[in-house]
Length: 215
Length: 224
Image (cartoon, each protein chain N blue to C red):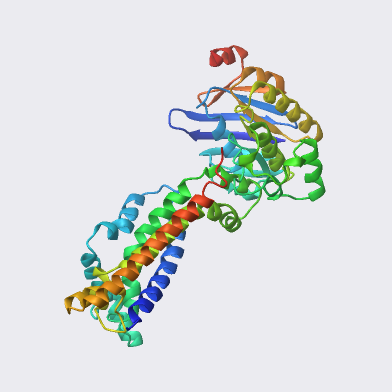
């Protein structure tokens, strides 16, 4: 269970959100600049909220001015928007960087159909392959939660649909809280157990808002 | 032919480059990605020797390391040691004039890759030290190497500040640029020509090698 309560001043508005994620996929949906990535960064420990509390299972990761667990100690997997693969390392080295258990990682690579890429560099593989490598790399650390920042936005339609299926399958295998950021409504509806509609740093719950945001 | 200028130049430039490389890389890594109050003032001070006449830098160094200078006095009182007119002074002058080049190259090198690459490593539990050695340093390496070669070339060619702080003492502080100046001064054009050819050859081969190396390596892992 991931519990998030964040307040943070951004350049054009105040980010103020409160939500929780059980072992499900929660989609953060909203236009660009609505604070989605900032929320993920706060959960991962890359940015610091001004106030609030972030709790993962029994561990408090952030609490006002009292607690701030550094990124390295949070055990949260993060798939960045442009994947942020290590360009100077092979696929295998990328995935093994934070690896806990080798046989687990090998199974994971088989599951994601990227075994044959192990000695390739990120510049030598396709967008869809990069995305699968990034997901494998994030899960290889056996995280307690997974954050995905628009992981499908750079992919063509066909690859995107495959990516959706993979994510659902992975979630079935590793039941951890997953937060997926997207500004693609179809994708949000297809993947999310729940959708949080974000607008200027606040969560609005009606779907009407979503349609407004979308248009 | 007395080869002491060549040996002295290579020795002092190598030591200076080593110092400049380590401090430049550390400082650039600490400063370049962070924003804090006074950052632009600190960066301006670091880059100042680049735009000042070397004589001004030399004057400033004399002011600090001279007999009555702040550090010069301490060294004299405590260790009975004088920096001015020694080869240490040559190194200090070279460090100060080449530092801005290293800092600028390193700072650009650390800013040219996506910071999320480092963040990704942190989310995987890597320590700061491990991230620096396995991610930041290798990704910045082409730019760091360029800074290293430029700093070495600049250290090798330093004249004004060296003359002011170290003076011209044959076999002690006579680097190649100084040897050229005093050879011309004393009408020994043969010796001047010889040293000119040596230093042009050194500079030329350093740049040639750097270009060749970067063509070969820089494109290797560029993300498409």
